[in-house]
Image 1: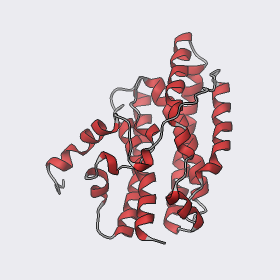
Image 2 (image 1 turned 135 degrees about the vertical axis):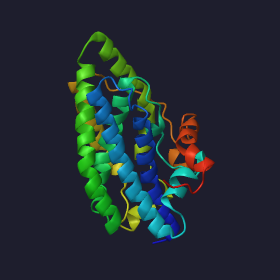
Image 3 (image 1 turned 90 degrees about the vertical axis):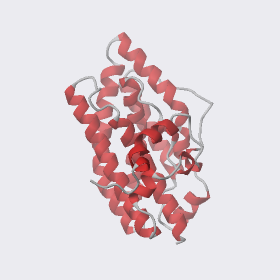
Image 4 (image 1 turned 60 degrees about the vertical axis):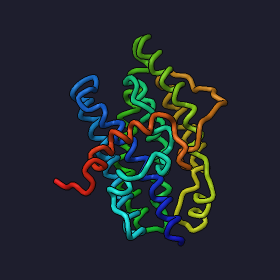
Length: 250
């Protein structure tokens, strides 16, 4: 397997986890109540742990760069995360909708990645799958509570799902790198996840008395480094300390 290809592939999923982890960290001390503050922080820490396992493996393959190089010294164009995970938290409904949509995808992804011929990726997937099951259970509970709650909470939850839906088609887009990894028995053909994802999300929405959006306009390009206007300021905040004091330790 070509080393640069495997590094790039590993970074895709590391970037997804890191960016969403930071988004959830932005809720710290701002969540609706203390219990939810702790829950969102813990989900963010799980995702950060997944990111670190993947960055560590990328470092091992690469042999030159460190985890900090990947996390703090790449530009917006060098990040390959999905557009969904970089969307702002918005109100609590937006955060829950984003988490349900992504965790449903991620659980299916880790299930398949667990059979990878790459032992390190399979091991990461096995651990991450257990954590993602909690992320999904937690966010599904809130989706139902808000969707099938008051008129106001229902409206906000439906608006959140509608607003984020245009970022979901990208979850199932493949390119030459994906196909190369699949051919080698390493990667996941995410196209095979779409039907299961749609069925799962449709069930969750129905149970929450919410409607499945019918959007034809979809956004993409995150895997190629083409992001929304929201990623750059997020990275500036996340990277400022290391960029101001490179190599600092404490």
